[in-house]
Image 1 (cartoon, rainbow, N blue to C red):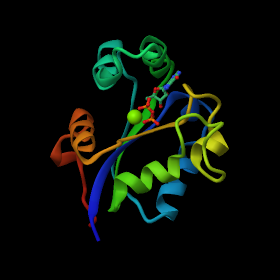
Image 2: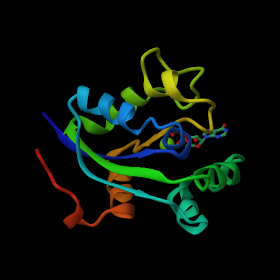
Image 3: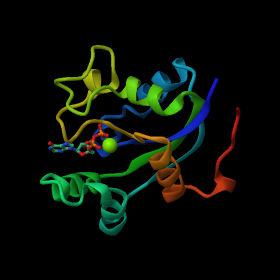
Amino acid sequence: MTIERTLSIVKPDAVSKNQIGEIIHRFERAGLKVVAAKMLRLSKERAEAFYDIHKNRPFFNDLVNFMLTGPVLVQVLEGDNAIAKNREIMGATNPKDAAPGTIRADLAESIEANAVHGSDSPENAKVEINFFFTPAEIYSRA
Ligand code: IDP
Ligand code: MG
């Protein structure tokens, strides 16, 4: 067992379609626990900082603007192998490539408006969790 924590974001498209519960239910069914959560609206500066690793990609400006279109739900998921497990439940970035039964295959509209974000490595999970949460806001249930 490797208990990990990962950052998950329910993106503006899924929030606006009232799919928060549907998405969290999938994480919980897979054994992941929500140990921190809040809803917020990103500022342009915060969205640019969060996606800094993509700043040279052609889709950067569109991605930042999309993340500003409405509130998001940010959460920390905890559980065995949480980083890879979350990515598996999310599915591939482009919903057209996502495996059947994944969040993105079932709920996402496009490669940009793709319902969820999930950390892709232990290093990034740590940075991304610290970006949104203080240690006192995380309620470990490991
Ligand atoms: P990931 O979310 O599956 O980890 P990344 O490659 O890290 O995918 O890209 C971050 C986000 O940028 C994606 O979730 C998606 O919203 C957006 N994105 C990625 N590739 C494209 C693209 O080719 N066109 C438009 N948006 C994209
Ligand atoms: Mg990514």
